[in-house]
Length: 147
Image 1 (cartoon, helix red, strand yellow):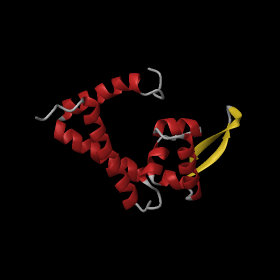
Image 2 (cartoon, rainbow, N blue to C red):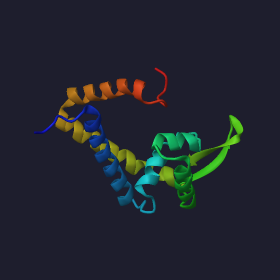
Image 3 (cartoon, rainbow, N blue to C red):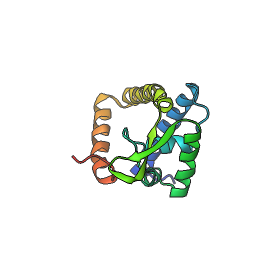
């Protein structure tokens, strides 16, 4: 007997596939010295930088694990640590120019995924999916901007 998969698992399966494709696109673009775990952490970095504790929460890893991942990303030249302008005692992790140079490959793969999903689902269903997920974000993402 086959059970119907819960919506949350169906979303996770699709997200995992997208993440793997985006990571493969980064690798194909020459960014072969970054791991999937490091890229997951780096994906949580805001444009102005993000505190390590927030990165750990977003990546759902222990702070010690996040520290080790950031250390490796910093050694490879993908991130740097700077003083937080809002709190002189805190540090922010920021993407470097090297990391930012890889974003076009990431964005292009994201666009390909969106186009493939829309071709499969149709324009109306894809729009409904985006709308529903955007609505869910307001109750599931503690870092989502206020509506």
